Each structure stands twice: as structure tokens, then as C-alpha cells.
Amino acid sequence: MNLLGHEPAWREWRKAMAGERMHHAWLLAGRRGLGKASFAQAAARELVGAAPGDSGHHPDIVTLTYGAKDDKEERKRADGKPFELARSIRIAQIRAMQARLGTRPTLGEKRAIIIDPADDLERNAANALLKSLEEPPRGTYFLLVAHSPARLLPTIRSRCRVLRFPTVLDVEMNRLLGEMAPGADDATRAAAIMAAAGSPGAALEFVELELGKVAQAMRQILDRGDPDFHLRGALAGLIGARPDRDRIRAILELARSVVAHRLDAALPDPRPIIDTHSELVRLTGEQPTYNFDAGLLAMEIGTLLAKAATASERADG
Image 1 (cartoon, one colour):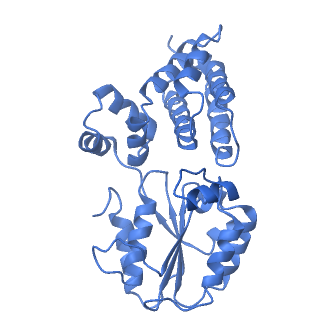
Image 2 (cartoon, helix red, strand yellow):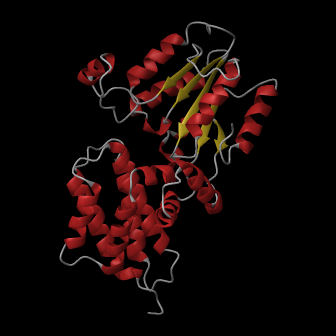
Image 3 (cartoon, one colour):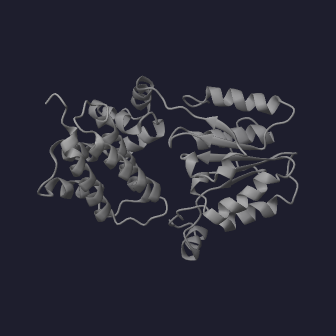
């Protein structure tokens, strides 16, 4: 079953598969939550000739994603216990994948390598991957999932054919949330659609993480400022003392969306809003590799919103 907005990507992929010389490296580009990873897995199964309807492990599909953080967490994973993930894809994973490329595919003539997300490759890992992209083994095809393609090495991007995944219209998002999150009220759905900026996965995550009150607290700071730090304290309480990485990422993206929506207003001086958005973009980019303290991060987000508060008044008063 194709996800929303995937039809053009499927047409391009299948046209390439039917051609005489299919490109060996593909960059699946678009916002987080558009289903790019699901597309990569399904496309890889078509490529290697997996039986329709068979969703089990296929020996000719290799997926690289976040591994265990360290040896201690790896032992937890081996024991079937919850474990902490690394914040990047490491060179050891690329080296292990490359060792397999010296052998023939197991069941057919093609092999698919999925890297998800490729924009979280360590620098050394990215350089090692580049060598495989420059001299790909016969029958090997790479699918690189990227939420922020600009973070990839230009030399990697230049060797990939790009499949772009568009965002979804608000009306379609509302219909999807009505089907998949029927318990969400109208206000929560509306806030989720605004925060997700066209990403169904982000909208569903917003609802599941119950970020409606967080969004309301952010808008209050942006509307009123926070001279006594009371609203920033409330925001920190809503974010929680120990949010996991997914919650921190969703909160940063929510803050960016709340600020970005203010740019649609007629502002007497939009520069504070623009500066705040730029700082939130920087924090979001650092999030995969930095170990943020939840309380300090909440205060930093709140302070950025408070600084931008004076720009949120409309030019007409």
C-alpha cells in the first residue's frame, strides 16, 4: 500500500527498474515523517525480487541505522533488554557492510543497502561510504534516506539520483489524523497539523507525545514574553525532566513551527522572529549528536521565544 504522496516516487523508481541501466545510488529526500524509510524497504524488496506479501528478513537487504550506544548497551540488546541508541551511524557499521560487498548476493543477482538516516553518518563513516559509491560492486544498489540532505557530503549527493518526497496538504493530514488518531480532539489535530508542516509521521507523533499543551505554552511565551520566567518554568515542566531523544527532537521541531507561523503575520520588525528561527534550526541540527540537558534546553527554547515576543505584535497594532 502506497503512503500519501509516494506515487511519483514509485513511478520514477519502477521506470528505472525497467530500464537497461538503473542508477546505483538513490537519495530519498524529504522531511522526517513522510514515510521515506517505509518506501526504501518496499523498494528494496521489489529490487531483490522478494515474494509479494513476504515482510520477513531478506538476506540481500542490508539496513544500517542507529546501533547500540556502547558495549554496555550492546550487551543489553543481546540480552533482549531495552538499550540506548547511538546518536550516529558509525564507521564500524560501514566497514561491516563493505565486507559483505565482497561476496555475491545470496538469493539473486541484486543487493540493496539502506542507510537510514544517511544525514546522521559520522564524518569518517561518510568518507568510507563514498568509496563504495564511487566504485559500486555489480548488482549493489544504495538507498540513502535523508531528512536534511544538505548535511551530507556534496560528493555523496553528487553520486546519487534524488527521489523527493513532498509534504502533504492540510486537508489530507486532517483526514489521516481522523482515521489514525480518532481520540484526538479538534484542537489537538489542528495543533498537530500546524506543527508537522506537512509531515504525517510528525503529526501522529505530535498526538502520541501529547504535545498540545507544550505548543500552547510556547505560543503564550511568544505572545506575552516572560519577564518573571514563570512561563519558561511551566514549559520545562511540560517537556519533562528526562525526555528521550524522540521527544526532544519533536519539541525542537514544534518550536520551529510555532515561530515560523509568526512570519506569516505583518510584523513591524521580523528580525527577532527570523533570528529565533535560525537559532532553533541550529539547535535542531545539533540534537542528533549533542547530549542536551532537558531543563537547560527548555529554558533556552523559552528564552528564544521570549526574545522574539516583541516582534509578534502585528504592524497595525
